[in-house]
Length: 351
Image (cartoon, rainbow, N blue to C red; front, side, top):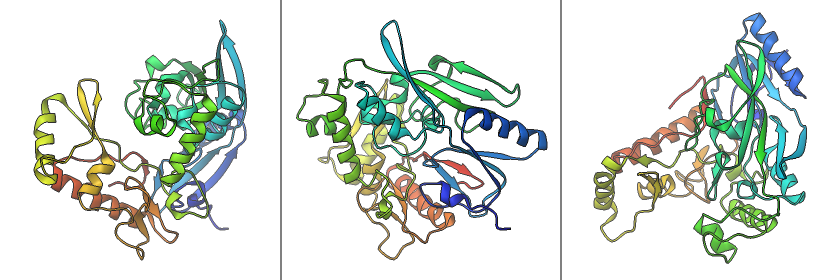
């Protein structure tokens, strides 16, 4: 009997075989599957939408639990609306349902592939909004105690693309609840490109439906909305996070970058508390890794639409992907002295 292949469960379409695959259509079956594997001493890999995973060509010698739970419920507390969704709910579908129901708040996160359960783990963000901005609570299954409990955002240590649920498998997200805006109006627009697309000033609002449509258009233009006919979307999204440079180091780092690109070239930078956030995509391109690098015949290439995604052109292996990721990371480091940090979760492999 052939072992199930993990590649079919990831947006990169990469990953070797699993010893066993269990699909869990509801939360009870999810926790039962985890308990059964733990009783048997079997390693477990939990996969939702598979949009943020890099799995080794050797695969995973254990049980892959594929989360397929699908319940969505709307409610309110003191006239403040919220939505609660199972971990297996497809994320963009949840955003669409909230907008269609007349609520705002999640529209800037439209088009992001993957499942709802992964969003607080990664503190997913786009176009000026992060999950942390709207998160009400996360229900977590503790594999040691075999109990589920709701955890407030304050206990998750949410930071840029990170939470204390990341890089661990002892606490598994089973449901997530988000606050919504009651008037069908977006959150204030904080991302210049999006505000410009909507002909609004930064800080203004628009209808959630208008913002969702604009975000989807922008993401499609960057190959960041899944499309089976477009290999640029066979990716894990942004492969590297935007580097954050401490206040103490910022002046020296910016000076080194200016030496390379020239003193008259503006360096994209954004405040991150007292620190400075740089653009990973800009650094990658200025280090010589242009769109489509290294060329049409390569099994893994940078997206032809933007340099922050590494894409499987259809015949790649995970080893191919890692080789290009290392080349890009090391090239940026050598040129600018900035070390890029990968955003995906690695399974049985590493950079």
